[in-house]
Length: 149
Image (cartoon, rainbow, N blue to C red; front, side, top):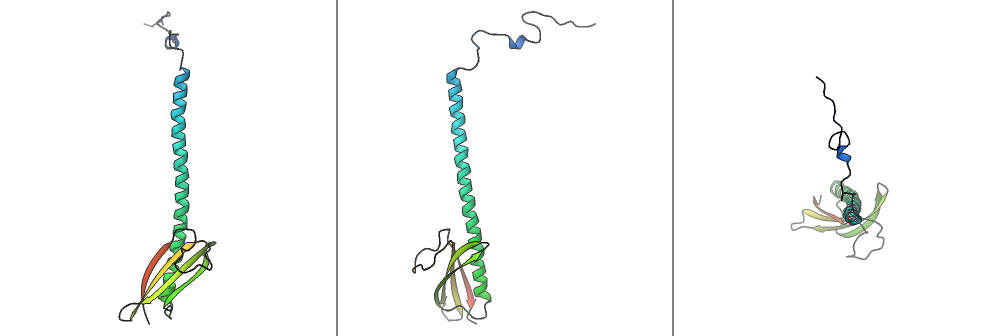
């Protein structure tokens, strides 16, 4: 037995597309509200992306500064001659970036150990007075102890 489709106002493939009074789509007010909500969400995402990019750049700068401060610490620990007591500062480049550094060396009680405080920041800092901040990037500090001989 075969079914035959009925045709009429309530049957057939186009019944769901039938015109209903009062349902003529979205009103202008509804569209404006939807657009405003979407715009606020899009602006929040753009602001989040900007903050993420700034944080990535700062982390990149911090990473290279940490590498430089660790290199300076290895130099201070492995050099056969201990670093001179007092403050010294300088600059150098690593991975195509300029860094400024400051080293403060002091003798600990007993005189058998030296305390070496290192500070590194990315950026130029030639001719800075004592106590001024190094460079323009985040300042990374590290303290190491080494024997006098």
